[in-house]
Image 1 (cartoon, rainbow over the protein chains, first blue to last red):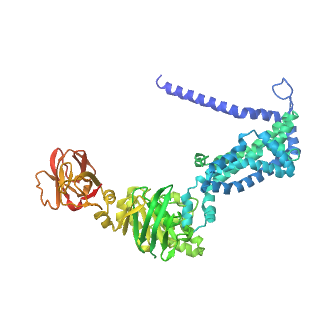
Image 2 (tube, one colour; image 1 turned 45 degrees about the vertical axis):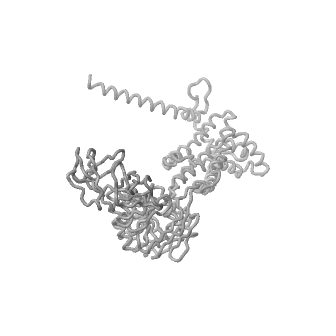
Image 3 (cartoon, each protein chain N blue to C red; image 1 turned 30 degrees about the horizontal axis):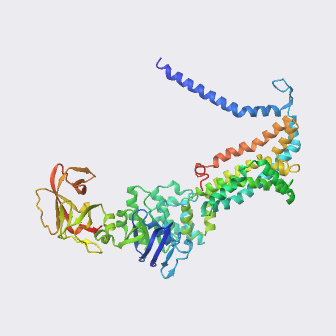
Length: 274
Length: 356
């Protein structure tokens, strides 16, 4: 009896853990599995539990047709947006992190301001402006609207990245004779690279998933996958929508795994500290 | 080797004066140690010398050159920091070679100088293996790398900002001897900032004692210890006991019923009977004798009767605590006194009395 008790306890613990894992898997993979089934259903009428006819027709359609074009457009936009945001945010974040700037907190909050309002009216208003500038329905317009939104997030993360690089390391370089610019490129920037990469990945994923702005500014000429998915769901093509969402989630999953490797706890601990 | 001069430096942070008119000359090739409690302005002084911080007013000269307006890059003052400040993404070799590369020296020359400097600061040659990064080294070794990085560019001034404060006691006492030795061998003018008086006394040519943004006293370690210039110096240096007393009608100083004769009061204005004074003495100057010992040589020694009640073992000796009314005197001795009357003997020339 005495010997069996711990074994029993162990067994119960193991069962509990397995149940928890199963629950987690169900929560994570449940919705995904329905997407997979839908994407492979060529015919599925109520009240059947599973599709009547299975096949890869919609996948083939996706790889042949517009879906792939939208995917490539989305990737192109994401790459450009990420590059522009990183190039803008790195120097801006460095300056905000290192120098005593009057109203620094206010500036950072101002950057967050657009987030305080619903996105739809903001983008709708922007689109009239963009039509006047003749960049609506063009790639440049979509890039501009996404850069505007992504810069905010990127700036907030990168300011904390640069704050986590000890100032004394730059002082040491100055004392050795390095100019400010030289010290930035030799010391601060290399030490901030993991944080910059992490921030860049977040921007890339944001851009790939961005919907409201892209729809209002870009369509009908510039269509990314989320827009495509929305348009096809409107036509009640669940299959196309499912294929689209599965394709969209691939880069997301890949990059989140990368992101986890680059993000350091220190960045999070100084996040939002000004 | 040049003389470094600071003239009337003032630096104020939000209305509090970090440096309040500091004038100081560092003689060529000497080690000057700035000593003081935290917040006395010693680190501010060092940062102003390095050029990392600008003074509100005053001038800094390196030799004949007025460098007051020059940024750190153009001053040629090398820094060693408390937390080493080595660049973690560079190898040990690249850390030391950084200053030389900025000077665009040929590769072979850089390798030679880095090798020489590594040997000089007592690091094993294998730390220069291109894969070795500073974070793999011990704290003491990291500070040696920092020292090598600073010295390799042959700076005109070496600044050390509490370089040993992050190290444990054993490494600390070993490394300070080493730093002093290297400084002498290179013959560089150095300024060393610390709050540790033992460290200061053991390596300095000149000790500069600072308090609240001002230089209290500058001199050799012997001068600072033996002839403190004022109450702060007397209290800060050594294991000091401070007692409150008053001036008696006959001009002697009285504390808790004991009178002290033959010790002058340090004061800018003459003292009058009834004035409050502070009596500063070091526990190392207080000797404990059995009560049977007579008060000998009363001109040179102050004798006090006391009762031994409390003591603690502090390693190699006992620290006794004697109560006089509400005040206490600490005294160390190798023998243990317990529950017995004793006599304390204090050399009068070691007693300092200041007007409050």
